[in-house]
Length: 175
Image (cartoon, rainbow, N blue to C red; front, side, top):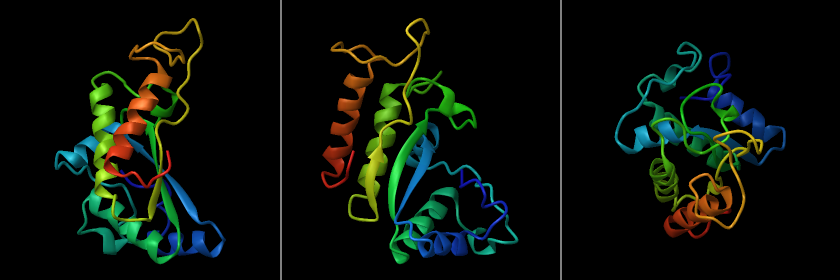
């Protein structure tokens, strides 16, 4: 519910250092589960070093992300929202689909719509990575496939729906 590494480093100076090294874009991974928790008003505890980042202690995890957006803006860094996995799980990126267990297609689209709408007036957030590496082998199930069907595991079909969902809220972002 916060960047890896913030348990060992100061968030403020880390973002400034990223900018000082010439980077101008952060691809920030999220789970569908976390985004939908935020959307429903639930804010899981963020994991960070409270001594080093004491200025974050009165913020919930969404407020911390908003702080990050502000720090990126102040340092000339743009943000790409990355749907990295369905569940908040350190191995979630290994799952082949944008859904998992009780996270379904509607949850996935709701998460994208929430973030697109929330940051539609902030040009710090310039892009959405719809899903980190949908994958799977032909003999695996479930797996992502690419064809002309409207199957729930067809990445082409779902990606088109996802892109339309994001662009309906914010037509100015990259997909």
